[in-house]
Image (cartoon, rainbow, N blue to C red; front, side):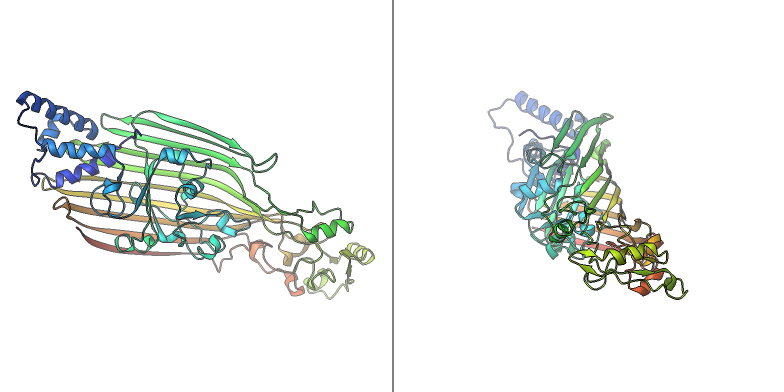
Length: 559
C-alpha cells in the first residue's frame, strides 16, 4: 500500500538517527568488492533521496555527517507504519512498538459504509464502542465514545500527537451508565477524509500520559500531502421518508514554498431522523376514544436524531526551515445542529400539565387565584374512558378565569429539543534537534467547544396559558489552553531519555437560558409544574464559570 509520508513523521524518525550519530558502527558499509565509484554513487543517491524526503539540500544532508548505514536505516522507515504513541522516544514502526498499537489507514476508513468517524472506528476496532440511544439528553449532541468499555474521558485523544480539547457536554444519560459524569472530546468533529492514519494504543497508559489515558490513546494523524486530493459524496436512506442523509467531503494538498505544505479538508452533511417507534398504547386508546387531535398512534420518534448543517473543516500545515527545524500547525472548526423529540405528553395524564391524579380529573387553572384576586370556582373535569367530561370542559372554556392546557394541546404534545454545537481549535509549534543529538519540541494549543441548547413545542405550565412554547435552555462552554516543552535524547538504539513540562488551563462555563424557561410562575401554587417542560432552562443561580490550571513535569527513561 502506497502511503504519503509527511514531514512530521519523517523528521521525527530522523531524530533517532541524529540522536545517536557517531555512536553506531557502520555495519552495513559497502562490500569490499564494490568500486569506489559505485560506493560514491550509492551514497549520492541516498543523500538526494533523504534530502527530498526531509526538504533539505544535499549539502545540508552531508553536513549532518550520517553514514550510509544510518541513512538507509532512516529511509527504511518510509515503507513502514510509524507510530508516536506509547513511547517518549521518536516515532518507530508499529512492529517495533513495545505496546499494543493498531494502525488504521485512510483506506480502512473509506471501506466502511458509515460516514461518521465514531461509527467507522466502532466497526474496525474491537475494543472501541459508541452507541446512539434515542432520547439520551445532552449525550445525543455529543455521543460518548469508549475504549475498553471505560468512560470517554479515560481515553486520551491526540491530533498529530497533541492533546485534543474536551467537549462542553457532561454526559449523564449516554453510554449505558459507563459515561455518566464524563466529559470527553467530540471525535465526530473530525472529518475522516482529513486523516492519514489512526494509532490506537489498546492498553492503559496513565503512567505515561496521565489519568485520561487509563483506557488507552487515540492518535489521529492528519494528511500532509503537498499535492493531490480527493472528493467524496455519500447519500442514502433506510426507507422513503426515514433517515435520508447526504454527505460531501473534499481534501486538497497544496505546497507552501519549497519545503512546506498545507493540507485542507472540508465536510458538510445533513441527516434526517430515523424512527423505529411502535404504537403507544395510550395514543391508540386516545384515538379509539375519538380524540382526533392525537397526530398518530406513534406520536414520538424513536431513533437517530435530526442533524442539520453538519460542517467540519481541518487544516494541517508544515514548513521545514534550514538545518531541519520544522514549524507545524493544525486548526479545526466544526458546527452542527442536533434535534430530537422526547416523550409524548398525554393530554389526560401528564403530571403537572394536564392532571395531578393520573388522569382521573383534568388540572384546571384559576386565573383569579393566581393573581391574588380570590377564586373563580372553576368546575372539576372528570375523565372517563380517556374522554374528559364534555359539559364540564365546555364550562371551563367559556369561563374567562378558568383554563386547562387541553385548550392549547387537545392531542397532547411531544417536545423537541437539542442543541447547536460549535468547536474551534488551533495547535502549533516548532521542533528540531541539536548537534549533540537532543530533540526538542515547543508547542501550544487552544481549543473551545460550546453547545447552545433549545427546546420547542412545549410550555412552562406554571406560567399558565401565556407561556411561550419555545425556550433558549442555555449554553455549555469549554475552553482548554496548553503549553508544552519536550526534550528527548536517544542514548542508544534501546535506551531513550526524555523530559518535559506542560502548563494547562481549563475553563467550563454555563450561561443561563430564557427566564421563562426556569422561573416558577404564579400557577405553581396550583400544582402546575415550573420550568420548560422536558428540559429545564439553566437559571442564573446555576450559571457561572469554573476554571483550573496546573503545571506538570515528567522524566522518562525507556529501555
